[in-house]
Amino acid sequence: MTDYRFNVRFDTRNEVERQAAEFLRGMKRGSRNRFVIEAIAARMNGGVDAAGLVEMLRQVIRDELQSLPRTVSQLVEASADGLTELTPEEQEANQAAALAALDEFF
Image 1 (cartoon, one colour):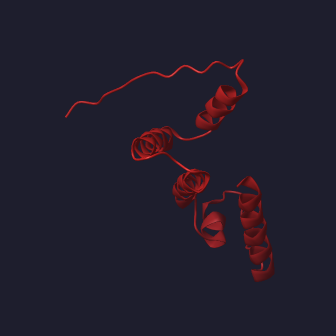
Image 2 (cartoon, one colour):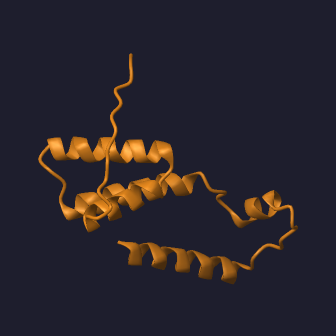
């Protein structure tokens, strides 16, 4: 199987195109590819409504977050600085803040 490749150019003078380029630039390479493929496939199958687009964005974010360490203890183990673990209350506050930030994003 051979890969099909194409280039896309964004006109940064156009606000919508500039925002789209910045959004894609902020994604990892594999995630960008998956996002574009899913967006094209959704458009071919009748278009993407706002809820569908939001769900696609959420899935991309979930995929990216899965590559991060899952627990504070894993972060501590990975840290060369010898950070101390957060208390359960601090962990809960951090999780709530992260979810609130994601809600604001969408």
